[in-house]
Image 1 (cartoon, rainbow, N blue to C red):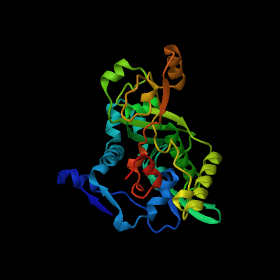
Image 2 (cartoon, rainbow, N blue to C red):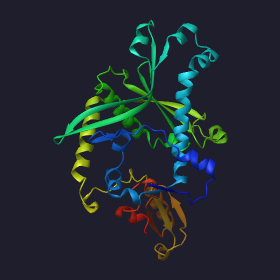
Image 3 (cartoon, rainbow, N blue to C red):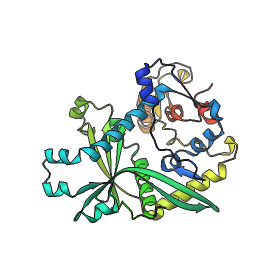
Image 4 (spheres, one colour):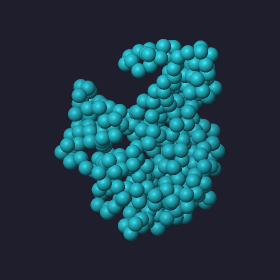
Length: 337
């Protein structure tokens, strides 16, 4: 892969953005990570058809990922080197603090009475046979504290308001739980509870919005508790997705299922009322009034006794973040070359 710097980002920042210490998995046949498995089918299959020498990214595209990694890294460090002091400052009792042990060995667990175990950045693997092929699914959860799975997300505040990614987060946590229950290393499961906590750090939080909008997150950081999917439901999803990937691995793109509106992160449609119907199909013509629902637009048109309502599809956002952008034919429907 080649990385460009078309924005002219300074060298100190560029080196920081490109530097990567992630422990990528190599040499495991038919391995797929949780985050990859959750991607739309085309985002999984099509990038593998781009030769390595033709893969190009720009350093500016690494900013969001780097900020997310920085939060994860600092939280891990806080728990590994500073948890006891921080909890004393927060007023937790001494006996509870002394029972906390982070990423313990079996020997450490033997020497602590009634330990409160915290697992950080712990990777697990699980094997599954689909269509006669042995697959290994792997994932690294952020944190399990006293049996409760926690995940940390840096995100937009309006993701919280509209809950646009709640199902995605629930599925991701459920996949970690599914892996944890039958780990290939044979160790006991770390996750024992059937709910998970998603900890949000909002990158665009505004105090004034919090004061005036009760649905807006009231703090720059918030937590949401979600139920985990059952193990049977989660495994059924894994089997279905792996079978879909296997079926389409060598298929021409025009024979693959299209990315859905949800996978495309398409915004809601707009319903535009034109008092003069002749302007409805004129490029650049302004509508008389816009509505969020077709019912509202039709009611307004009826009250006017004239005009026409035109539906405008929502904006597609996911294509700009897809590794298959350059070769995807579906993308060209929304963003022609």
